[in-house]
Amino acid sequence: MLAVSLLVGLSGLARAQATGNANYTAQEIVDAGHGFFGSTSGGLAKIVEKAFNAYGLPNGYILGQEASGAFIGGLTYGEGDLYTKNAGQSSVYWQGPSIGWDYGADGNRTMMLVYNLPSVDGVYGRFGGISGKAYVFAGLGMTVLQRNNVIMVPIRTGVGARLGINAGYLKMTPKPTWNPF
Image 1: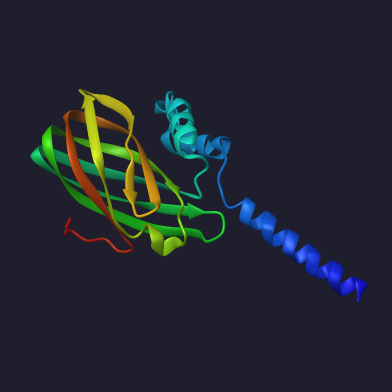
Image 2: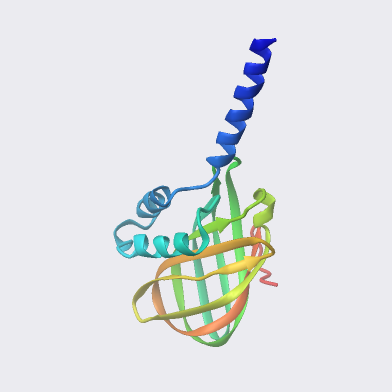
């Protein structure tokens, strides 16, 4: 009887520890970002620190690339992989429209920190927000998007010429599509 209760108690402790380890630390995110962004990631640690101070520890992140362009109205298309500690890796695609005072085009390597993700399927849907970009050759920036309780913080480094501010959304899907709506 003592052995059974000890075994049940240890399995409960293991479950609690597994749940507590479902989030990523700032160092894990910075290490993944440095490996992904390479030498252009000088300001990455500061941006990650800002996101962690505002939103805490993410329980997922996406590494991918995207292209976008705008002349008042704009479009964004991207693809990448979602990483979670408890559900592994999954492919994800995103596309979306925007409208605002926004001109130019850019290509980016993107890391999206994902907060409050209940399951892998929770990343699929429309995440709305406001974005601003200002660079002539290259830039590094952060945006915040939200859908219900799930918060997504894209961190982008890219090349191009872009100036403006816009409102829009990213539609996250499990398969690629050209339809941004």
